[in-house]
Length: 149
Image (cartoon, rainbow, N blue to C red; front, side):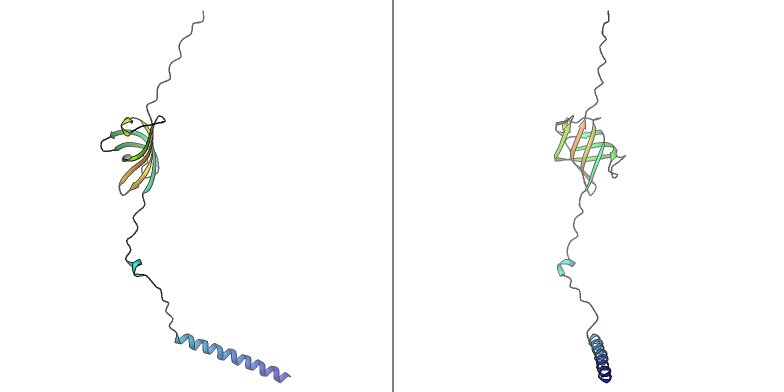
């Protein structure tokens, strides 16, 4: 019985050795390079155009050109690409413009109005899609004197 166990163990070891040697030989026959398939169209595609970069800002209007559809704004705060700069922006024909809470046209805005604007920058052009403006603040009326006699 002991002999039989030894024989079975020896055969199992021999099969394992012969099997691994054949696998190694088979591995040597096959090339080790990986194939990657790349479509011809992928090599010739044009790069995607750059997406417009959004911006927001607030400041005061320093100049208006209604015919050209542009505003020049001294920006006090907003996104860092326009903050603390004087920027000339193009106003989109479809832009939403409000002044003192009422919908108005570009011609209704005035130099000195406080303004909040939102839009997108493409290449070197800032195009505004929303404008909220506040006219000059009205001074509070002085209280009328009352008579206490």
